[in-house]
Length: 343
Image (tube, rainbow, N blue to C red):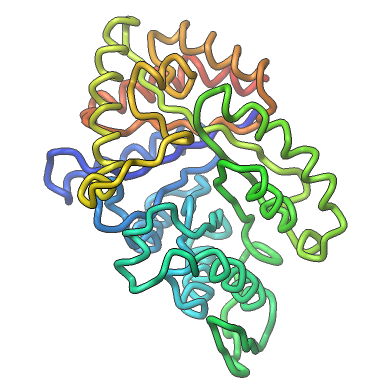
């Protein structure tokens, strides 16, 4: 069992420069604890994401850490000129000496892609064409492409990534159809939601991986054994009661950030993968909180019930203070991680 961190970088009520400094400290604590990888979200026009340009943040992280893997979860590929993204991936992989993980996706919010002048219905084919173009640019010396959305004519690829043939790909999904796409390309997978919803999806990925083993895209993937990830919100404290109090407030604050653009446009927030109330999230297994012993027991129970080998924890979210999130993660690192790593 490997353990990673997911961070929305959702803004709380403090100056942004202070917020960034504190997140660097969290990432360094993750490195010291032996966390496998630190994944960040990309969002636009919402307090959910204070890293709307992930590569700016990741370049800083590359120089502030030495061993921690990191990357976007995910790049919203339709928002990027592919050539620029190819070159920046190469830069980041070299700046970090080969520690970059590359998550890709199309985005779930119609308003976030619309602010870039895109029609949401185009984002799926743009993702598929864009990913093929990016992978070609990371593996070829000259790039030629003439597609529906992108055109590149005999461009020399002067930069290459450290990791060959390219950094590992990651995909976040809520459906089996999307999981099949990830398996075809040989990607690591993550999902989140209630135990009831994610259990069949996690179980399906092993079968999909086997079914797509002869796909041409799989042959070039650097991933030979996928990490199948389950995202969970964590709050640890000295007592169960204190952790529950903090988690309830933080989850409500985080949900307001998640749904800010939906509410601004008088639309119903997406549910299913995202659970609206703390009570539902706690009952469904999405929120794990308490003193270390209870948290450890709940994680072990989920590993026995569901087919995942990568636990993706979110420790900094909502209105948790920096001190609270650092204490929560510290308790997890000292008193929970050793037991999980053995599973």
